[in-house]
Length: 88
Image 1 (cartoon, rainbow, N blue to C red):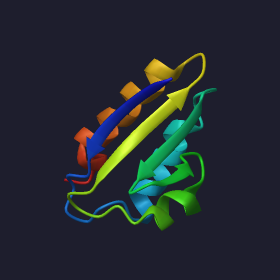
Image 2 (cartoon, rainbow, N blue to C red):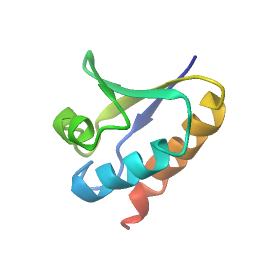
Image 3 (cartoon, helix red, strand yellow):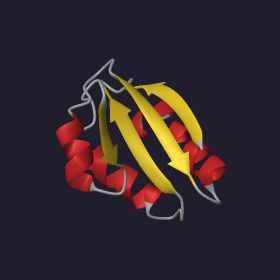
Image 4 (tube, one colour):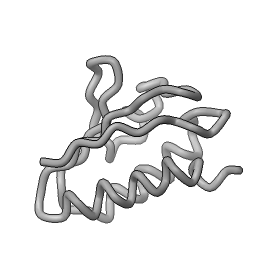
């Protein structure tokens, strides 16, 4: 299992478009992937789960992946967060 904490750095936070981008990315991996914020853990392959997480600008989100491609999954997700979900 790999855990990594990332910060939401795009001004709009995680809204519908970034949520869809995250789900599209996580569906490419066999690992179980979760996002955790303030003790709430959601399935990162669920768009509704991501939206209800309510991660706005500056929020810290823990990425958790467990499975055969966990390292690659976390790396891909970190890149999305660092690129501000390709919005800016």
